[in-house]
Length: 275
Image (cartoon, rainbow, N blue to C red; front, side, top):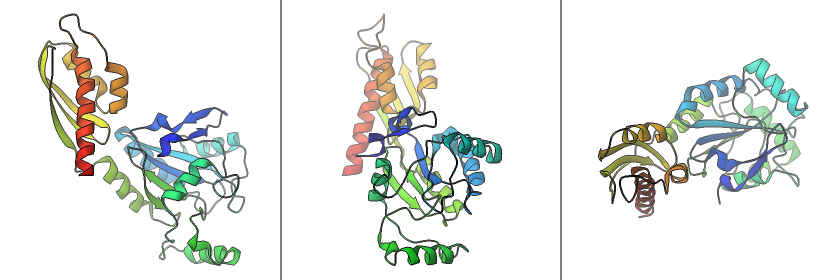
């Protein structure tokens, strides 16, 4: 199981599959518009603008469970975020993140990463700890969300990698985002083609994301256009678009062979990670 198994509701009331974000680095937040941490929106928008082109997205889930600090309707929340902070990342319909009516997505997120404490250096930590302890002296033992702007970082395969409490400095969050966006273990792969114009395909693969595609030999035209078109796509998207594409000259096409090359590279990388 991973986050792609869940559906959520957008502010228009439409159900959205988180599979739509497959292959991206995701930061999931539970937000509020009247919280001491609400100014984090400014820095979060900066992060989104800075790294969105590299495959980073923020998914915002407003929640009114903490101090009733998100009292507005979905429409009012979106309007506030737009007018006050210029938010352009996706904002979803208001949800609950704890309790009997909590979102199944958050049930899963909390099962993957529990509470590990607030930043002791943050000025709001003493207040949060005192308030939570008065409500439940064992609060720290629970994986429940403690306050607004808790964050979960998701890798390109949909796995929960990190949980950040609202007191965590966003520079630390950014460091972890960059590590996932720019890993140092990108695998280079060469695939010998069969029954087509080109003789081999070279590519890089990181998780399920394919980059730096090049063909050796073959006809011109498509072999220049295809790498430009699909660079940065996931293996699944390449297979969906290119598998079975035919060629008028050979028994199989370079596009179809690229789909096979991507799948073979993905499987080899996965075997290497499991070894």
